[in-house]
Image (cartoon, rainbow, N blue to C red):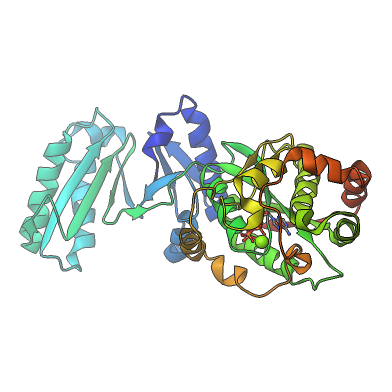
Length: 390
Ligand code: ATP
Ligand code: MG
């Protein structure tokens, strides 16, 4: 059983949100999922490894928490009599707790089916009494060693012992699509993760300098995309050969402006691909002042080359915070592998920190900007990644 986050339920568009969540849970786990009373239920077939399901649900954004629950049917004839659903619920709970040792326990019942003949408090007391008789454990409602959660739904009751935190956020897909500029570095995978977390589907775009550099950056990007794909199930990656244009920039323009020029071309090219794929924004891993190309004036000069907004989810973060997140997501180890960055190998010694759009437009007059953009776009290759793979 998975519960969506509270924030989510405040959306006007709640059914859309919940349907997306059900679809994503089903895609991730390859199990049938259904929506009932603000919850998502997955019927796990026998033999499905719980550890695997747990790992996968930890990556489905929109889940506040989930639990491996046991199900007791509450069929209509059982609802009326004194015996019935509640009897089997008691029995099953006793069966499960029998082998466990716990000094204290607490029964926490939630009843979303108001026709059930007992209130939540009554269920707590009825179940609590038999568990105490059988196990002699103490009742502790504040900090029980063994919480016994019971949910009375329409046609079934669920019970479970452990609430597992989900990743929070919004279901991927509900917020629309963005195009993320993914380098081989630490920051951009984290920026992609932040966007996935807020429900965005991501199209990845990587610029490489092969054959002037090795293909290491492309290999790293593929590894990073493999780590991020379990969050969105299918990832498209565009690989864009950038070396020839970089050579041109190196010979035609003043060195201090190089990196800004690279970035402006990157966003122009990315924007065309983004629009083709229906993406509404570009995403980068910039943080103000982290390096010379990321001063506020330079970020603004780069933005002015694009018409789509450039979103920068790491803008206010320190490097250490970004690194911690990269470690948590699992992209850090890949990101720190050495590679020749498509920009660092031609890095000027004194990059400009206070560029203006006007200056850049003047410098770009020496180049056939449109021609380069379409030339490079004609050389793009792409690859698709899937999760689960089978
Ligand atoms: P990262 O760790 O993400 O590479 P960085 O601190 O090295 O970031 P820069 O190299 O200045 O920063 O890049 C800033 C942003 O520009 C990156 O986060 C990324 O979104 C984009 N970018 C840089 N190089 C590339 C590239 N080769 N391909 C795609 N995007 C890139
Ligand atoms: Mg970089």
